[in-house]
Image (cartoon, rainbow, N blue to C red; front, side, top):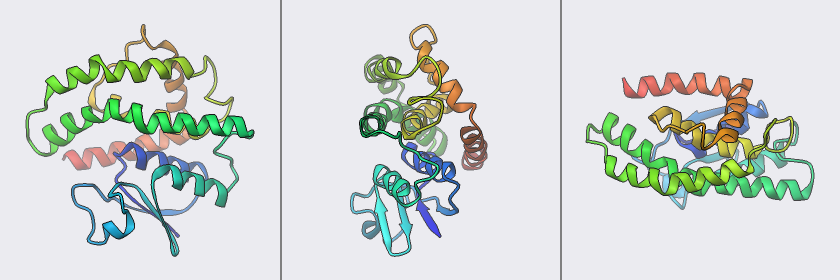
Length: 216
């Protein structure tokens, strides 16, 4: 049985959860958070990050490594495009989603959910205003350029690229970050198509219950 260590609110954990559910693999999730890791976390995750996947004696930190392993170990249904060039491009889009896009939206979750809702501290809205004026528009401008007018990132089927780019954007909805339709029409249309898939609809329902329980 596969065991995934990590809380669903993390976009990296969410990406792996979607990959597991896409491939219909049975797994157990242990909701580890950076605030309260288990005693052996340094052994499981030398970088101290989530998620970590355990498959028997195999321990894999890093969401990208995990997704690649799942694809190699369970190739059907395919989560990556068919050609080497398209697979490489999908990995790049994943890297962009994991870095620039996550970095542009994570502060909103940190301030409005973790600080304000969980810890009872005032959200640093000045910090968020700075992010909204700089990092967020840069990241979204690139997404707007690369998303397709129709379908998904590599045609009619979801791939890892869709999972990696959509996972951080779900944070925007959760914490009330508006994506202006006039500025990002292709992004919003593509995002709506992704969210409407059974895979994302089911994941959203699960996470809605988890967030409601977390916030009380």
